[in-house]
Image 1 (cartoon, helix red, strand yellow):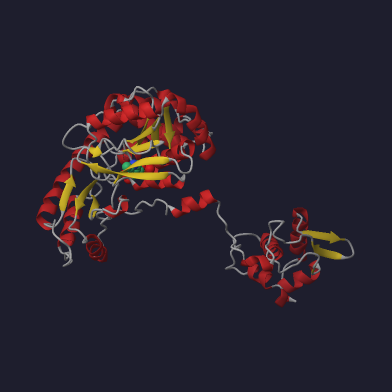
Image 2 (tube, helix red, strand yellow):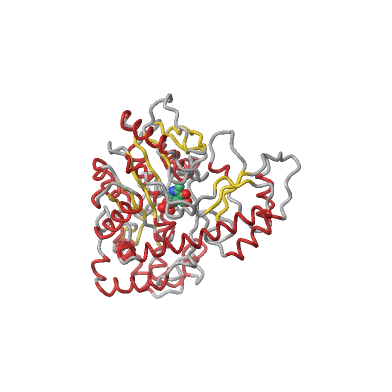
Length: 490
Ligand SMILES: Cc1ncc(COP(=O)(O)O)c(C=O)c1O
């Protein structure tokens, strides 16, 4: 008897996946699984409870309870005097099991949209601290004690309200703090009613792509440019038009077909670091006004410019409501906070709030409340001031080390940011990166940020999160790399 019931035996073993359940639940799970996978066909008779209890060394009460549970769920039919039978046909139609002949058909067929999303390859950020993984602020220098105090105070004050669902547009107090900060520091024209609090700029890009782009719509992208944005727009099926970047930022080509959307990082172009010139800003805003294109301004790290004050944002020049402004706390506070914001033209507020509610409701209330307090009480401004100083000194150290250790690397622009872009001799990047990786040093590739084949070899070296000794050690390692013979010196 027991040889016919290996699944049941397995379910009762201490190492089985259901081991944390009681015996009755384990038996139920095993019987359900046997029915679903077809080991027990419809109408087949289950052993009498007494027999099964004996075979499995269980009490009859346990087996009786399991059968009763499966009867209540509809898996089993019981007839007094006749016995217990499997009640369901496990065909594809019922959603329980595919017939054998159909098992050759691929089990997972994605929608076209799903396949487009998967084909983008997705976005993945580094999970641990490593020289010179790109993009992380210094989390060791974060004012943890202040954050803990503010969190505890909030939890003491009104824990119940913070546990409820929240406003899909974001907490009013946080929207006020963000609006106040952006008006004063970035020249954004907005009131709190235009601010939408999101979990990330990536979410903003994804929602905007969903809401504004139909498959085939054109999007102008900076090239090199931010891969996260490219992924979000490609996932929506948009046609991407990569435009070159020079020392004045994106080089627009107004003879091209009118795009539905233009994605820009105007303050500190990602990854070259260049600032979009005023002339081009005015031309782009005017173009958007005339053509009805949307401009998405991703102001992802303007807080960290070290030599000059950042140029006021593009959105402040826009009187036609065509610019959507994005910012994130991933760099200014910490990435796992999962808080970012969009400042929306009035007409887009309601559609975006609705789209946001369809997507995930809202970010965690506690995180929003603590962030609002952190801003309102002046900690945010103080933290930014300190981090700017800290990162500036690390940027200076990076420049010094590059000059001493990497004579073959050319710094592209070092005016700000959490990472430095360096150009490498043509054809050298792959081999140098391979060597660096084998010595435990990450050298994020510039090529990943580029679309056109005229890609330049280069690295995007993250430094802000690294202490001086870690920068020196990483640079020492890079200094030992051997330039491949075929690489031409620029
Ligand atoms: C240009 C740009 N925008 C946005 C982000 C990320 O922001 P978030 O974590 O809010 O998606 C990054 C991160 O590296 C970035 O480089």
